[in-house]
Length: 95
Image (tube, rainbow, N blue to C red; front, side, top):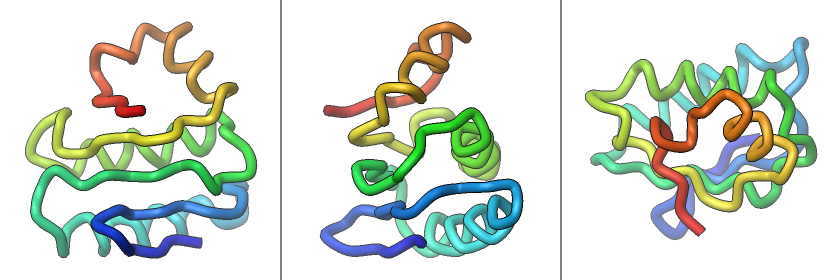
């Protein structure tokens, strides 16, 4: 589920193969309706999978530049994938 409050797009639940496209479309609508940068808060995301990371990268491709989205509270597993792929310099990660 995606909510926008406190100037952040907040993701919750779990991104699966069955709902990844829905998450993508919902998030894209929110991102395109806001001014950049948009903070994407992942604190309530149940599982930081590579599939979830793929959705985030797809959103990033729809923005003017790599720093249009700021990712907050990245789950540990997702952070390990980001580091293993050397994406930490390409993604704007905030505490």
